[in-house]
Image (tube, rainbow, N blue to C red; front, top):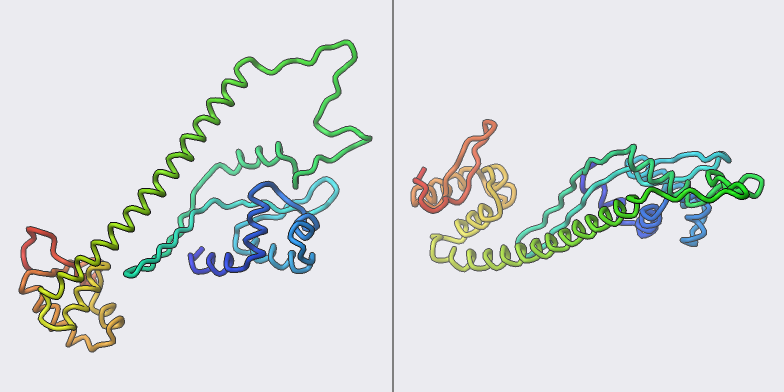
Length: 252
């Protein structure tokens, strides 16, 4: 899925609330409608869109009632700064079978079906017989797994803080670079070209598009900057990509 498409989907508040509900457990349409205070017809439309996008899927319980659950695992990141706007979407693979087992334990749509007043799957204890205790190591395994989960969540928080600091450092460095450009560039156009290359390696066509100038003008300035040792190019996929020279690199 394209990041822009997911952003459009998440732009609707009710769809975000639906995803939040389904992240806790599978839900029926009637349950979602009641929790959000939105009519069933509107909820069905939102669910259809989410299903078409591959975010959720529909299943049917023993009573032929439809319920929905999340089937995708992805990470969406949006970065906005004075010098950059980036959106990235990564699909994260995981074992569907294991997730299905977890959902069964949680119960379809969070409700346990009943038969003759007894909950299915819960075997009654026979009179005079003691309930068989769980394996001695079950609690140990659970505590170890939950401890590992806490560690991973802590690492996620640490990585998030590192990303925040990196973005702050990048923004500060861009400020410093822009201040130093004035002592390097011969004219305002060179300033703009160097600014484009500071953001990323790019092609002549992309620079022309962003600055709305003819290729001959851009090429002349690129060649001049290259001869002075500030920029260079590399050929990738039959395309010429320009970039700022690294310290110690030779001129083009």
